[in-house]
Image (cartoon, rainbow, N blue to C red; front, top):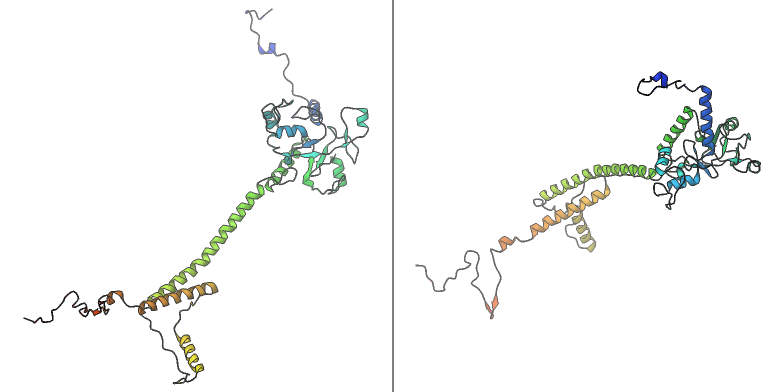
Length: 365
């Protein structure tokens, strides 16, 4: 009866009971089931967890072979050699990991203590226990593992012992590197997220290993800054020295043509030197009393010596220029005698009569 076109049902007739909000016990039961699944099943391969088991920075557990297959390059639905792979596709794995795993340095192998009698009784899955309290590690007990060694304990055992070294291998660890396995509280998840951010600033991965490329970038930036600072300092110190050299060179070159060599000082010498020693002393005093350019006001020894050499060369060049005959003036007067057939050419004169020949018997009319 009904729904034959003669009647239109209303919502309250179709919906008998409204969706009730889950109670606290139901929510806790659902969370317990999710934890039990996460403790027994790898979320990537959807296979039971079996050693070796690894964990990321969020405390989630994976089979190591599933992580290796995810990291190997391959097609969307296969591993590194192209075969089909059971479990999630590569894109689904990337969404689940959310960039937490980019290499083996981002995971730590968790070393669980296995109960010896569990293998004989169960035969399927070994039971993981705390080596201190001997409690079973699972959804009912909060468990942690240490970085970098990876040994797993119950959270209560780590708090009670209060040691800074691993109870299994005696390797040192800090409080920040105690990682909760499958944390349920938001506060613990926030703590792990802050720890990862701090490690990234230090250039370290979850396993406390250096991230490739982080140190080089910082080093190159630091060395580039130091190089720029050194170049700036050298430029500031070299520019005043170059200005001083240029000024002294210009002053000497402008004064060199007009300066006359000073006379040698013979104040303490005899008027007529007779011996060789007296002649040498006169020559030495003459050389020492001649005016030589010096680099005054320059504290750097290398710059002062370079300036002295430049000034000496400029003075020598000026003296050489004064001693050399002027080519323009010498071309006006000729005193050369051309010999041809043993006859001297006596008709060459100065610039007043060059190019003209006056006959011997010529008379002025």
